[in-house]
Length: 309
Image (cartoon, rainbow, N blue to C red; front, side, top):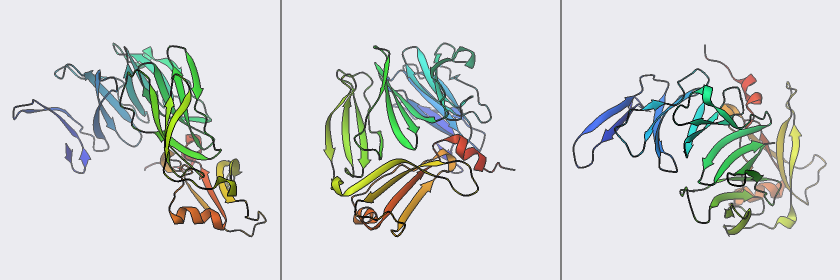
């Protein structure tokens, strides 16, 4: 329920009656709340979120009258989110990890003392999200300014990243609602300079793309894309990764116009997206399109943040 322009109350309603009981009320005006059910349908999660801190409570999904239990108590500057599989919580946390790491914790006692490392912190890789399935975990990550999808096979105890055909692209998970399927596959959405938008079904067991649906295709023989170029703004010593797209006919002598686009606040990085609309196509016809990717790496964004008084 929303009051004062924020979600602060959560009720339990008994079907067939007029009864609605207040389950939780968030008193801190810096926090909003949200409720979800884990993909395996075993746990109900109630989260409270501010700009720099989160906490979660849970109950078994088959016992709506159960007492809500805290997963990790609220702490200043501790951001985390939770998913569930088997008898474990998988917690994506920034505790001791600016770019986030993933730990597991037993449902019986998910306190920090019982955490076990699942994905270690890597200064050059940001863990954006984790999605759990019966036999797999899917990590959405940022590295070198590009989105990456990493698959963890629980049965084989192996990991691999999905390979994409182009050096510059944007990607993300589409709707994947089934936790346990006969032939598990990921639904991905992808856009690059050659395919302005298509969906791809990645078979997890076979590690291959088996079908896709294209919306629009460009003539990639006339265009060049590059990644790993770098930009170092004045007054900084840090180089940022940059994606570049231009037509092969463009002269690289400084005479061609260039569109430079980027954003980096709040840990947000702009992926190199493409559009089939004329405005999206003509930009690369006239000159060079650059995307700078700075926000995905928190160690870059933090020094420029202004703390509240």
